[in-house]
Length: 380
Image (cartoon, rainbow, N blue to C red; front, side, top):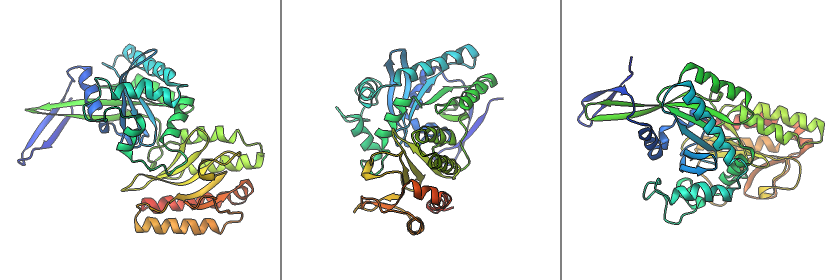
């Protein structure tokens, strides 16, 4: 039986719409190109707003239907399929993997030239979306803002994905069969950090009105309360970082800490090329980083090393609720009372750095401090 949808019209009357087949695949593609917000980004593990950076993008193995950049730099490769038949799905999945292998190993500059710039200045980009001659950086700034207040900004995150091939793969169709969904669940369970999702994009029609709805029917598992991350990706990155640690005791403490962080509701472990930031999707503003973790070695962004918990705040301040600010103040005070806490070199980092010995001495307390801070920022 076809699903139905009731919409309220401006005059107060109601129109009943019924699910009907799309006229053709292009109709579905055009809807997502014009309205990428149709995709349930949070359910897919992406942070919105998403930006279209590729449409019919030519790669070595073919043309990608759609390439999306989530807020912060997560890359999603989207392919449309025409029907639920298994052979058709296998072709769609093979295409997604082929496209991923083409993107894998690109530099950020190559990605901008071969994908983003060709889209921005090609026939598939809606007029007025991107200023003439705009770079990827300028397009991102227009949509997300220009502040670089995190060690893992969108460039760092995108570079990490291009290096590792840890993309989001999204198959879109009007309907998926049970065997298809099982295949996607298998891939999510066995692949290290790439994520596979199936989205049913359905069309409704009735009278002179129409509508489209996107439903996630398979995706890599997200823990309850998590916004834009998964324990799978968090721990995959942790494994690589911990592999660089030669101190066995410190490595085990870091592994335990990452496992604990991956279980904190509302916290995203956001990976770049060398380390990660710990982010909370604060209501009413963009994600806020409340910590950074780097492998042993030279200082990174803002002189950060090892485990630094706190936040970035320059002379301009930042927008957060009174309860959120109070929670951050408690966070700062709690961390400062722990043995071995050291002040970061940069005054814009409001927080404390914990070198290996201090992490080993305080790992449980560090986890609890992050958990409490995330909860206060989310108002839970």
